[in-house]
Length: 111
Image (tube, rainbow, N blue to C red; front, side, top):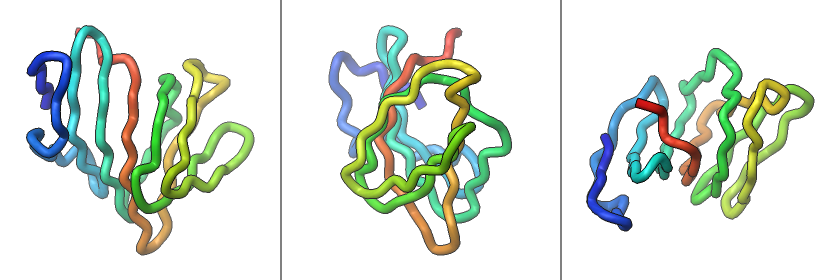
């Protein structure tokens, strides 16, 4: 759900959208930029590599970030930057009983 309500949107006023099994999101889009609150739980599976660039903050919980060269554990308070491109392909992994709340910033989908 896009919430083009000016320069500021409170996530508490946005509706959750079920994006996939184990994933729901709140999304704010403005001027080609996107801010998303992602709530992930066990059962979420990324089947392919994401090659989009992101900035993220782990608000709560934890999960793992698999890259093409390593797997990194993400926990509450972590902040990261992932560049665009195939060489920086990545996916999130959650184990049994895990949940994570992430704030993610990136370019909005064209269109």
